[in-house]
Image (cartoon, rainbow, N blue to C red; front, side):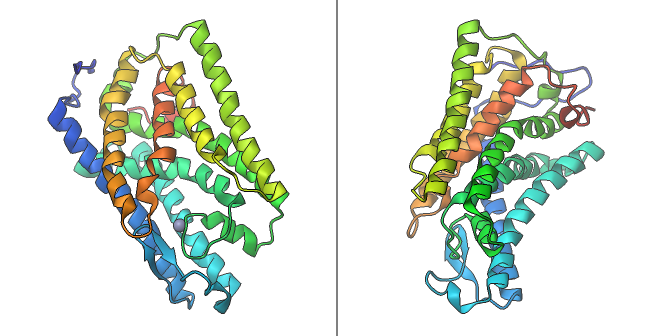
Length: 317
Ligand SMILES: [Zn+2]
């Protein structure tokens, strides 16, 4: 049963109910699909401006046909690969900044654009993790790997970037909490915390260490030249489980994050999964895996009295 969360005096409530959750889920799906398409279009347009006949090689990939990259200058290929992730991350932080500076930013489109920030801010860490993966100029998502290859970055340095990227990915939920707090009066005004029991804290800590161990394994394997195997996914899953165990879900602020953000996020991204099986497969099938953990971690940070952190505090109204 949905529970009405506490709303501060004079602030409009964020309505609950199945119809609202379905509508929000649809906005999530549209927002995520639009930011992915904008990313791919950037690859395509910048690639063409750099003299590469870039094209959509799939529903969520743009670049050059496999095996043809050697025909084009390395610098143009690097530019094509660098431009889109840069845009995704800059858009995420620009929206964070806009929400910090202008209380009414984006008006009625606010929920839609907040999801660009929820996507773009942790995406910086995701691209840093992907720097150890195989270079593929057809647009497989490992854009940073192509840029690192152009600059001849040694694999040992890339391995360090991969682990650092995961650490950013984990803490980026603080900034995600900031944007959600700026947009949602319920999250902003709900009382913060009731803590979790000691056994849950221990289990959560073990899961955090397991997630970090997974990403260290990815880094080690990249230096050895072997496949990352399931460890990249294991890192995301471990962090999501850790944050879920460490969140007191009965607290009003965790319920507000769940009802207005996490639940529509899960439904919206699962609604995109069938599109992931069009053609040879694409990111829609798996985008939920790196997208969901920062939202679970947002609920965790929201219950932890972190509103004194500048990343959160400047989003207060
Ligand atoms: Zn890309």
